[in-house]
Amino acid sequence: MLIQFFGCSDSVRSHGFTILIDMRGSAWAAIKPILKVLQEHFPSSVHQALVVKPDNFWQKQRTTIGAHKYKFETTMISLEALPKVIDSSQVTADLDGTLQYDHSQWIDLRLALEELMWQAGELIDRLDDLQEDVARADFADDVTGARRAIDAHADISKRLAKVPVDELEAQGLCDCIIVDS
Figure 1 (cartoon, helix red, strand yellow):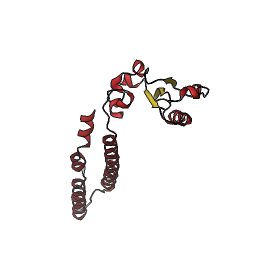
Figure 2 (figure 1 turned 90 degrees about the horizontal axis):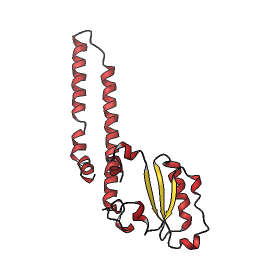
Figure 3 (figure 1 turned 90 degrees about the vertical axis):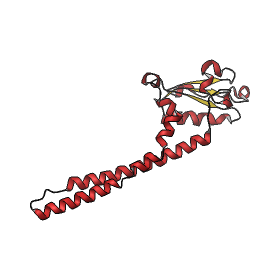
Figure 4 (figure 1 turned 45 degrees about the vertical axis):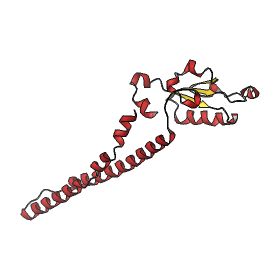
């Protein structure tokens, strides 16, 4: 979903997310903590929150969700009314939509992204160390100093050659992201 979001133009993205919260079969009390998390962590990213009514909504009609507390619009909606608000191509099959979604594939992609981020962080640390080594290099005043500088340069070249950029590219994660989007 984030790949799809970042694939949108800036003008579309500036409108923010529409969050769909499926409360069918859930305890009604669970909605307030969900909305609170959205408010605290994504206040400027969420445009609206649509709450699919719980199965026993009419029994809980007296409960208020306190929509005025949030910076985004909060709307209760029935499953039947959902296609009037969100295109069915943007909703998964469990909500009567046509969006293809495989949760295990999403988890695999997320784990691969986390691994890539960890490896990229390690790579950046190694490159920073090399940059510091290069910055510390003194200019030689004599032949012996020049030989030491050449040896240090050769050592840095070897260390740069060992940086696993090709390994990161070979994992194909970027290709996977591009294909999925």
